[in-house]
Every structure is written in structure tokens, then in C-alpha cells.
Amino acid sequence: MIVTKQKPMAEILKYLKGHEGVFLVGCGACAEASCTGGEEDCRKMTEALRKEGLNILGYAVVEETCHMLLSQRVLREHWREVEGSEALLVLACGAGVQAIASFSQKPVYPALNTSFLGTVLRAGNFTEFCSMCGECLLGKTAGVCPVTQCPKGMLNGPCGGVDKGMCEILPGRACAWVQIYERAKEWGKLESLKILLAPKDYSVRTRPEILVIEPRRQ
Amino acid sequence: MKSLSGALGSGEFVITTEITPPKGTDTAGIKEKARLLKGKVHAANVTDNQRAVMRLSSLAGSILILQEGLEPVFQLTCRDRNRIAIQSDLLGAWALGIRNILALTGDHVRSGDHQEAKPVFDLDAAQLVKVISTLNEGSDMKGNALSGKTNFFLGAAVNPGAEPQEVQLLSFQKKLSAGAKFFQSQVVFEPSRLKIFVEEAKKHNAFVIGGIMLLKSSKMARFVNEKIPGVLVPPAIIEEMDKANDPVRQGVEIAARLVRELKGIAHGVHIMTMEKEELLPEILSKAGV
Image (cartoon, rainbow over the protein chains, first blue to last red):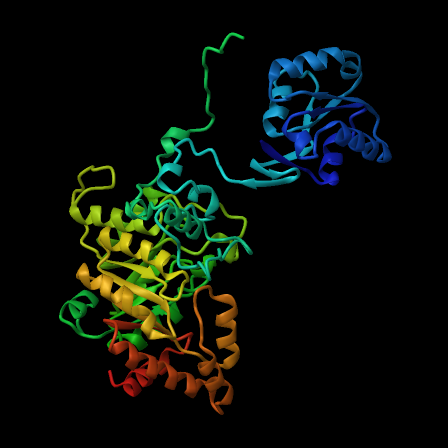
């Protein structure tokens, strides 16, 4: 899931300043799980903004804001509040904000920063395992991603900064290559680590990506 | 004095040291250091924005010391350039007369004075070694022919103190297979830690130069233990520094001792004089080299 963090209130207030009437849009998928854009978060944001003297006309939580048709449908259902507002504040990831901005006739502002693709270790505890590079190397690195787990993205073993198995940049975190080595040892795959991995092919990941497929019929 | 590759090739015990380019355009200091070191060392490394602190470029610094008659080892990191810029700088360096390269991944931008910078790391050090081998063979990394190839004496780094050592060996072996001909090690206070790397290098006819740091105070020794990953100043050495009336003199004694010990293990020493270049001849004469 996409992990988001709330922006500082000062930044949000700066966006909304001068807009008479604001409508909030939350996201019931990832932002809900990040505790940044669910029902409760929208309610808290409404309270906080009202305390600052803003006129909040209400909020709606879309099941998935990044699903443009869903977002359009929900905002149509709330057309009265949307009509009456001068701006929308979206409590969702960047994909959600842009889905709404693409059809909104009112200015749209983000309430969150989009942080990373998170693996959920347990409720409220997320970690970044994958950075969506478009060319998965996990089959060559014992299921630990050095592109993501190593701050330098080292593909061929650790740098000289590994200290007693720990990363010099990330306090308290094990070196990605120590993790890879230990896992490969456990799996009896140490030999496979000796192959020099070629530089990554960034042409497979030219932004912005587009994918069009024939959806499965239900 | 022989060139670095010439000296290593003929079995001489080599001496290298390190020069940090200025933060700014005043080149008087770097030129003066070059003149002071000329004839006393086989080559001097010119650091590439070391610890990710922005300074005059290592390419320009290498040219400056070359103009003063001191052979440079051009340090090149992957932190700030993509593969196009790296190859381009390498061609430029060769064309301008630089012959030795130390291929490094580079310290992370988080260590430095521009922590908001985008870390590039398009290549890692082992891949960079491979790229330089390819340029030496006459083509770029995509296989396009070069009009005029390079013939760099190709070096890389190793940290013999980094634990676990078997994982460090993985990077080392990849750099060897990719064509590294010499290694300069991170500072080592227990020279025996280098042995396994020297043995591996010999299988590939490559050389290992051991890193030595001149300690100037016990405070500095403690700082090294706290701040430099994978480097350990043993308690006995810290005690020696603590007891010394003149810590710098004691530092010279310790450095000379380490040079002597490394002489039996490695193919040379890389001495970091910590802005005390003038003490280098004394370290060497006390060590008997």
C-alpha cells in the first residue's frame, strides 16, 4: 500500500487561505490505513481547520481516490457542497490528488505527502521493501532488494561503510548486503551472489508510465 | 621515482598519500602540498568531494598536482554522476594526462554538507571498475568504439575492518574479477586484517596498498572509533596516545610501526597525514622505507 504522511498544518493553511468554503476528500484505501485520510482523519482535519476559522462545508471518503470513476461518482453525490466550495483539500496520495484534480473545476490541494510503497508488518507499522524499479532483481539477491534496502542501491555487495553488519547511513538498520548474504547462506545460494550484476536499465522505467490492458470481465 | 604502476609492477613497496582539494578556487595550498610531496611518494590520491562535502573537483585537483610534477590517483565516485557523465569525465581525464583511477561508490550525500542533494549512484564501484576496463579495451559500456582508448591503471577500495569480513570479500572479489589492478584500503590499525585480501588479490596479479592514518591526539583516535565505520583503533594504541607527552610525535611512531608491519603483508602503504604532510618523510625514515 501507499504510505502517506500529513503535511504540516502551516502548509495546508497557506493553500487554503482566501478560499471561502472548502470541501475535504479522504481516501478509504491506503490513506485510511496510514491514518491520514480515513473517516476519522477527515473529521479531525475538519475540526482543526474550523478552529483556524476556515469554512469547511463537509467531507467525503472515496473508497479509492486513485480510481477516477469512483472519485467522480462520490463527488457528484456531494455536488451541493462541491458547488458551494472554492477549493478541495484531498487527504490521499499524489495519485488520488491528481485523479481528482484532473476533473475538478475548483482548485485542488494536497493535505498529505506521499512517502513510499509500504509493506505492512502489522497495523500501523510499515516498511519500504520495494521501490517499483520496473526490473525486479529479487531472484538474484535472495529475496532482499538492494535497490530499496541500500541507501546507495549497491548491486554488487556492501560498501566500506558497513559497521558490524549495520548500515552507516540508517541508524539501527542492518546492511542490505549482510541481509542478502545471510539469507542466501540459509537458502544454500551463496554461489549465485558472486555474479556481477549489470547496471540497472532505467529505460524500462521512464516516467510517466502508462499501462492499458483489456480488463477481465467479472 | 617510478610511476605507481611501474613501481608496483617491479615489486617496489609503494607510498601513496591523499590530498583534499580546496573548498573554493584558491589553489595555492594544493599546489604547495604537491611540491612538498613530489619525490617523496609515488602518487597522491585526490579526493572526490570526500564525505560528500562539496569542494573543487577531483579531476581539476588531479590536473593541478600533475602540473606540479606529482602523479595523481584520480578518485572518482558514483555519487554525483550518471554513467554518461562518468565515462565522459574518464575520457577527459585520460586526455589530460591522468593515468591512475580509484573507482569508488562514494560516501552518501547524507554524510555531507548538501544533505538535500539527489544521490545518483547510477553505478556501484564494482560496475564502475567494469566500465573502466571496457574503456581501456577501446569501447564505451554500450560497445560503441572509441576514437582513442584509455589505458588507466585501475584501482578500487577495500575496507579490511568492515564486519562481517566475508560479505566485504564479496565486493572485493567482484572488483577483482571486473579488472581492478590495485586496491587502496581503508585505514587499518591491525595490519593482519589485510592478509586475506592480499592473498585473494595475488590470484589476480593485483596489488593491495594498506591505509594508515597519522593520529594526532587520543581525542582523534576516539573520534575515529566513534565516527568512521569499520575502523577500529585498538585500546592499546589509544592508551599509547593518552600517555604521550607529545601526541603528534607518538602518532608518528605508531604510523612508522604500522608501515613496518604492513611492509611484510601488503604491496605498499597509503598514508593519510591529516594535514601534516611535512611529517611524512619522518614516518618513512623511521619505518626504514
